[in-house]
Length: 199
Image (cartoon, rainbow, N blue to C red):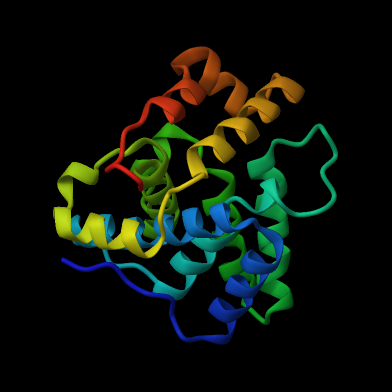
């Protein structure tokens, strides 16, 4: 079992450039781990997917945390979804591709998204949940997980994400993050999730 690297396409290049120019390094690494775990988990489930769109959606799924224009009201995943949609169109992507990326970004915090029939949408959720909470990593070969964590270490990421999610929940009490915290202790789980030492 393997994980896929970034597709060599203009759209993937544009998404990667936007990610790297917008996001801090810890968030860039999270998005790359999200993609790696998404491809591995979808592969394990024998689900075919569009490699380009899965990469683009994974790369841009947290765009709402770093892009300028925060309004203090719109949940980050919904703001990011619209930004990602527009970015795909600007890069020459087809409207249906932009729509799919928007859906993947908008729905990545919804628990039911793991069962979405669109593999790219499900994949972003699965990959992000694997990286943030360690979900389903035990279903992947240890060597694969170790390789991903070595290439894109998690150092500094839990603290960054916990702070970002607490800010989101505090300033937007009706947001999905706030609901997940009230119902599941989501933010506390971020801090409590254990990964191999130093990663």
